[in-house]
Amino acid sequence: MPPGRHPKSLRRWLSRWLAIQTFIALGLVCAAVYYATNLNLASRQEALLQQKVEVVRHLVEENAASQDSTRLRHKLSDFFYGRPDFSLVLEIDGERVYYGSPIAGDNDAAHERRIAFTLPLPGAPGDAMNAELVLDISSDIRLRKALAWTLFACALAGAVVVAAVGTLLVRRGLAPLDALGRQAALLSPDRIGERLDESGQPCEIRPLVRQFNAVLQRLERAYVQMEGFNADVAHEMRTPLAT
Image 1 (tube, one colour):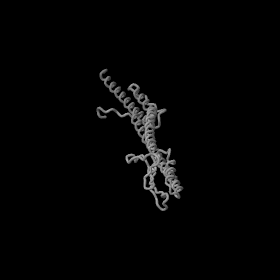
Image 2 (image 1 turned 135 degrees about the horizontal axis):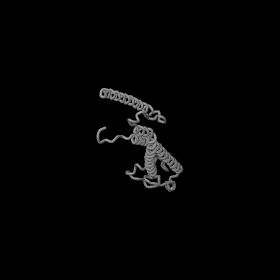
Image 3 (image 1 turned 180 degrees about the vertical axis):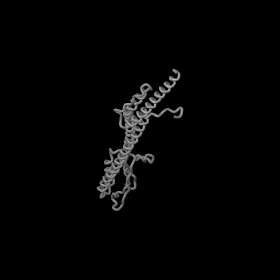
Image 4 (image 1 turned 90 degrees about the horizontal axis):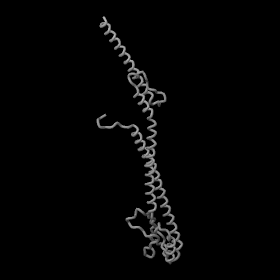
């Protein structure tokens, strides 16, 4: 290992990548939930616009036989009263009339949905007047923002929880390696005949324990042979000296 670099921790590595994978998985799930919610909101907005268009058509058709546009204006005013989310722009007698809440400017076009349609002109069969229905979707936008932040917080919190639990599980899973390290630290030349205990070890660690014990056995044989050689040399050296 190059100098100045700290050894990598297997615990931290496993915990970090477990948290990252969990955050990515939860992020994908949250993105799917957010996308489905947006589709449902868009579908609801389209359904509301179509519903209000049909109601406006019905009111205009009821008043089509009459040439008095004042009655139609009263009906439309009553219909859009108390509905701040809807606005209607209608051309009656060459005049643009607004019903409902004020229409937002161009800068707020992202906060509204519009639908343009034509209506029969009262008192003039065969003629048509232009109409535009506007739906204010500011509440849905706020809901989407709140949902996005909530889903992000849930994904982040889930990753943190999984990282914390994963750290405990990784520490528990690596406990047999720690036990083997403590056993290996107790080995010494005067206790070279001892071996690492593989009972109770996971099946993934047992081959390593067997290989390590085989190395210890070869070392023991070499040590015994070296002791025998030393004893023979000492005996051969003592015999001439005694003579």
